[in-house]
Image (tube, rainbow, N blue to C red; front, side):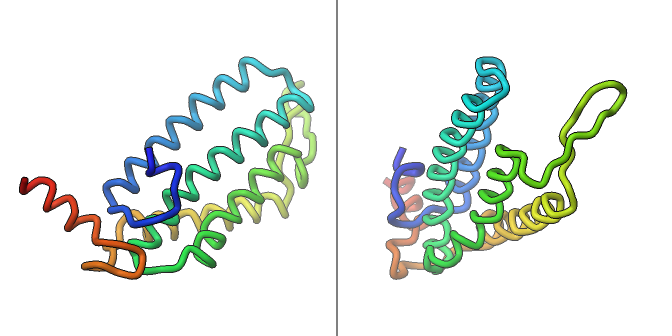
Length: 159
């Protein structure tokens, strides 16, 4: 559980991917529940903000520990990796930069140029983050943020 609750130490790529999968599962299940339980309006927006805040906290804990394994300080990297997605989510929740369009007799919200540009930027940063944290090796041996998580796993499997 410390994977999602602390910002100290280092994690391997394997634990990063487990954390990623766990957060995606939590977000999907919670989102389905929110859509079915709350009507459109202020209550839905408030619940979405609370859920997004909780998910950002969990994700930040995973990202910070993986950055530590790569030998990088959490600041500014966690901000670079997380802020575009948070801003995009806020725009989506409050429908800033969106306009209402009628399509086949149904009114839908469509992102404008600014909101769409931010979404594409956030996607590019997310891809960069996934490559940086999910595929590139961490620092071999101990570093300023703690012992090598791979060495700890090797010791545990040897006993």
